[in-house]
Length: 147
Image 1 (spheres, rainbow, N blue to C red):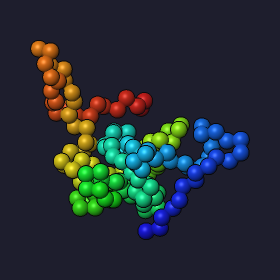
Image 2 (cartoon, rainbow, N blue to C red; image 1 turned 90 degrees about the vertical axis):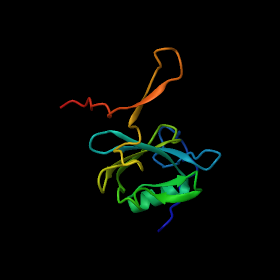
Image 3 (cartoon, rainbow, N blue to C red; image 1 turned 30 degrees about the vertical axis):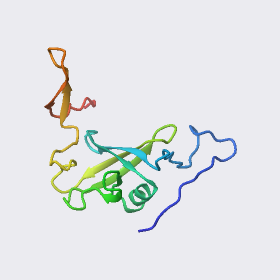
Image 4 (cartoon, rainbow, N blue to C red; image 1 turned 90 degrees about the horizontal axis):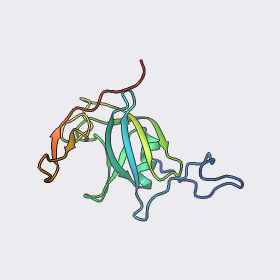
């Protein structure tokens, strides 16, 4: 797979907010947060980290790759399950320290390794007695997009 390099400096007169250069701001650990949403519904599917190699592989292959902190290795999402994330669009925020991947989930449509559509299949519920909050299964909120 071809590796790409990312621009590191701004052109004269540019600011971070006006540049047209993709300059991902990797953290001190060499990682950048990546949020993945369903390109059609907007549902948030997962959150993971990318290093420069994972981001390069994602851009060049058209399929989402991430850096596994627990396994300390590059992984192509869905390579084992068949639930690949086909990239529709990659965006970055104003200071380029996070990426947003809009993707189509292939295979059976489950983006989470548990088999759930999204990794965010539970919500936090405060305890009525003031104790520790609990988790409960919950479907993703319905889209509020205008029809």
